[in-house]
Length: 615
Image (cartoon, rainbow, N blue to C red; front, side):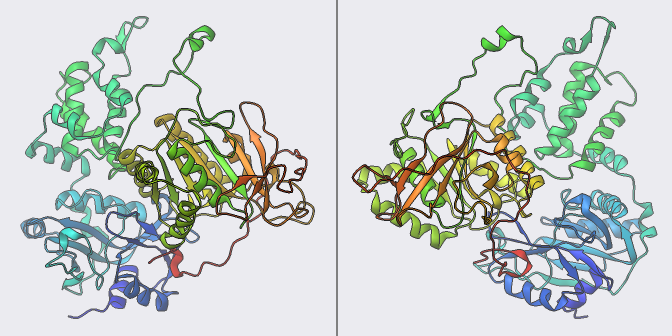
């Protein structure tokens, strides 16, 4: 029986109103999750949207339904679903699952089998009523293990491919053509959730899997996965490490094993690999080694961590040392920590720095010029470089490729570069012309940033702009989340962040005054954590083309005086000289950071479903 996309979505989501999400992805790019959408209220926009976005994008949707008002598809926002689902991928996977179903005699075949590639299928069992998210997660997970489906695809936050779209992944193309995702089978059946009560519990299934599966050698696990120094240190400890002299007993072995299990799940270890790790440390630590229930205890640990991490959240780690919590005064002075400048007395290494201004003053031009100077090892606007050329990388989250290219062409033209310098820039000046937000607190966003930094190892990452590091409005709470994540990266990587930031919309009282921390949008947390904040300001009382550079925070070193820049004659800024009609900049004003949540200037989002720059 033929089923339209609309009929399929009605079967999956039902007729009652609910919040759902769509996502898009280009090959090797970041998932872009759109704004929350209400079904079936926005049905007339959803169907054409899927058809339109399908031309160049891999398109996904959430079979799960989320709480009203949800801004993201995070697991904790899950509400309910009217279907169960699994993802089968690989030659023979669907056939093997069908054999298992038919051998049971009680597990029904799915209502829908959606063909997503030559060897890939998504299966759905449509239910006769809406079922809470917790139950959906539990039953989906048990189905996944029972039918040996993809272990990363069972929870309420997962996205699937809708029919009548295309699979653009290169490995699935046939003679260069992307296959259509199609309805391969439909049987009109709907099911009660009670039918699935017979599915074995996850602990039993993992136990069976490990009994029949091949447990990899621990050396293979060590080599295959991206261990960090902290957890490899925990793994290599011997039993004596856990001895408590006072209690005359071994302590914390179980906690250390669970810690390793959580870490392994985070970085994508299979159940068999997790079991190999736990078995190896238990052989050495002796927590369960001589007990009859040893395998059961190890399987329970794996089952526990899989509830939180059904799939890998982290793909790369590069922590070099385990952090020591408490030092004595002299002990700390004897450590090897070293403070370094990038630009002497202006921009420190291993910190978060900002250039801030209202729209149109020249923030992007400022950082592009700074990046060029860093990449070539040049001084910048009188700031003295320390340590020579550095590799820099720009995450352009506001300007897309066409506009960014225009800016960089102007930068190259006005910088009088030699062929040798151009070659150096090609190695040291890297750009990611995304033109769209990168939510670094989402698993997808964090993984993308980790991969970029891991692959290219930049010394300084420039971000244009901070407000595009989350899909939410840049409130104080959002600002805190962003800064917390970036500070974590500082501790993990040898890196410096430099961000463009938009000041708040000026009010009548402040429009003609020099910038202060009160103008810094979302400043309570961002300003507190920043190493330096510089602000560009168009003084309304001066000649056109003259811009002031003010320091509104400088944590270390002497605070520089305001600087007058020429921003008119060329794309690049230059310091105004005495014979350039120089005038004295406005005196610096001081103020305490504000907790105001005033919204910065912004226009309406012209793109439906919250996606930006979808070309």
